[in-house]
Structures are given as C-alpha cells and as structure tokens.
Length: 449
Ligand code: GLU
Image 1 (cartoon, helix red, strand yellow):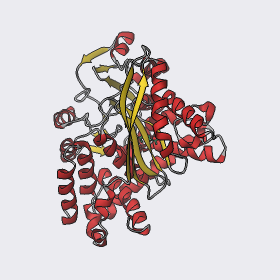
Image 2 (cartoon, rainbow, N blue to C red):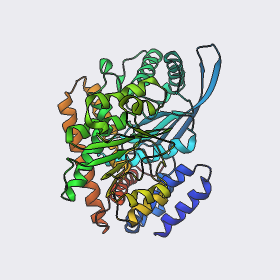
Image 3 (cartoon, rainbow, N blue to C red):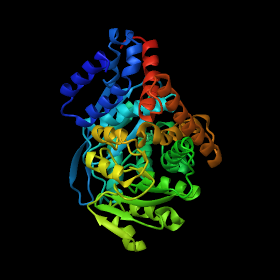
Image 4 (tube, rainbow, N blue to C red):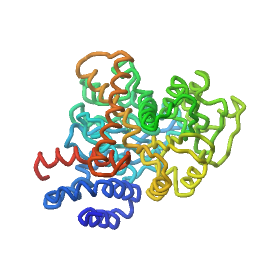
C-alpha cells in the first residue's frame, strides 16, 4: 500500500477510534485508491487525503418535542456537510436510536463518492437524529420533524444543502419538514428537499428509484457474465422502501425475490415476494404501520418465518442486503460462500464489514459496492431538483430512462476505471477510484482549504 495512504489510515484509526463505522469507511475507500495516489505524489504536499476525510462542517443541534401525553423529550440532531467540491451537499436524513456522529460521518463520507460516481453536480452530506420513530403517533412524528427542521433550516437551501430521506425518514417526514421550512422562511423553495410528495414537487419514480437502480446495475453485471436476470432467485434483507423497489422491478424483470427481513427475523417465500402486486404492496402496508415488524408477512401469506435470523445462507443466485450497515459479518460471508451464490450486490449503505468483504472477494463472489448499486436513489433526487428549478414535471418514462442511463454509466465508469489502474474486473475498487478521482480533481482546482 502507498505509504501516504497507510499513514492517513493509521492516523484515522487512532484519531476516530470512537467512531468505528467512520474508520471502516475511510479504510475501505482509501485502501482502494492507493494505486491512484501512487500516480499523484503532489496530493501529499497539499494533504489531500486528510482533507478528504475531514468534513467541511458538522452541525449538531438539540431537538425537543412533545409526545401525545404532553411530556417533553430531548434528542440530538446532526447534519454533516462533508464535501461540497462538486455541488451543493446532498444526502439523506436518518432517524434511528443508534444515530451518533460516527454513523452520520460514515454515511456522509460514503455519500460523497456515491454522488461523484453518478456524474451529477452534487457534493456529499448526511444528517439524522437519535430519535426512534417506531410506535410513534403521526402527531408525534410531525412535532419531531417540525422541531428538527426549526433547528436545521438555516443551514440548508436549494443551492446549499439538499437533504432527503433515509432510514426512518420517508415521504411523510419529508412533507412535515418541508412544511416547516416553508413556514419559517416564507418562501417557496421546494428544491431544498427531495423525496417530496407529488402534490408539491416530488418526482415520479423517486420512491422506487433506489431499488430499480440496484436491479438495473445487477442486470449490467449479469450481462457481463452472459447471464439472464429472468428466473434468477434473490435473497433480500430489509423490507423498507428500497426492498420494495427491488421486488417491484424483480417482478417486471421476471426475477424472484424469496426473502425479506426485519429486526426480529426473516421470511422465506418460495413463490416470491415479487410474485404479485398484492405481496409487493404489502411491504408498504407493513411499513406504514410503523411497528418495524416483519412477521406479519408470514402470518398474512402463510410462509415460513425464521425468528432472530438473517437470510444469509439460503440457496439463491443473488444476495442483495438492503437493510442497514454491517448486516453481513464474516460469519454471514462464510454462509454466503457456502450457499453457492455467485453474486452479491450491496444495496444498503456499507452492509458488509471489511473482513467479510475481503472474504467474499477471496472466494470469487462478484461484488457490487453499495455506493454504485444504490446510487439510483440520489440520482433521481437530482432529477427532482432539476424539475423543481425548471418548474417542470417529467413523466415516469422520462425519469426511468434517465435512471437507466445513470446506472449503466456508473457501471461502465467503474469497470473502465478499475481497468485503467490494472485491477481487472473489480467493481468495488473501480467505484471508489472513479468517485475519488472526480472529487480530488475538483478539490485540486479549487485551491487549498
Ligand atoms: N439516503 C439515500 C442515500 O443513501 C438518498 C439520498 C438522497 O436522495 O439525497 O443515498
């Protein structure tokens, strides 16, 4: 490994030891770009690597809200504006009790490279709060979102920073946040948030975009190996908006999603969760209940439920983790290899521990990295921003055509960049190198700060 890269990673490991997810992301990206740093000794002089792993800004704020019984609760909100060299900061907001600066920083860091890889003019950021939306009433969610936006609104804007959804934040939460932003600023700036409802500037296909994009990317990988997606079986984890989009597109493409999972286990549906509109849409119903429970699916459709387990190890052609970070550890990776599956497409952000990733790679599993596979979501977010600024509404076909173009382009750029550095067909390194290259060039051209 390049000595400058190594020293920056070692330093990050000790400096950020209390933020292990962030260290993991830094190590993964920087070790991939080592061959590029070899070719650019000038980067060390301007300390480019330490600058690229240091957020431009990290905002943290208090969020106080009242529950339905009239009691007050205090949470902490964050927005990390990681890198703005390519455009306004862009990335989602996550509401989950495990949110702390290490999670927000890793997500924002990953977002920078993902966004660069889309080829679109956006920087990277991420936000969230350690708030647990599970079991909260609609009124409680609204009060929390309003309080969160009251603290955040002065730091964002259509040309500054454009948040969207992530875990625990969907169309409903974006609506409440947008309403509060409009009320506070007294201006119609709907380009400040993406993932909005269609009635006030949302984009068609945005809810489906991450799942659809992942399937388009998978299709490119299969084509490379001369295989057809039709008839392939897929194990998916998670059951949220992303898993829903995967199932919907799998249905169109003739592939079969046989598992979905929740925090308390997974279900195996031999006919396929993707076998009917009714099943696919049941995912939305479960999500809308706000209980974060997957067993309802097996009760409703009479299929097997595996409590406290993950679907890794099921006999399928393709794995698509789409729940959360580090859901696939070394043990899970071993099961995946044993199952005989050939393809592993990361859909959630950083679903694989670095150890597990290394193991899968050593055992010749074809890996699609999350920052490429799930980039369709943010890609369509940028289309939403374009429609808002042009005061236009695109048709579903127009959005979908662009989404397919973006995903093909991400795949092609990743393949070509890995080849350029003599790494062969390495989609992980290719994605990291391509994203990094773009940001590094823009930073170099904009001077040192
Ligand atoms: N949270 C999503 C992601 O991880 C979407 C971000 C966006 O649309 O800005 O990329």
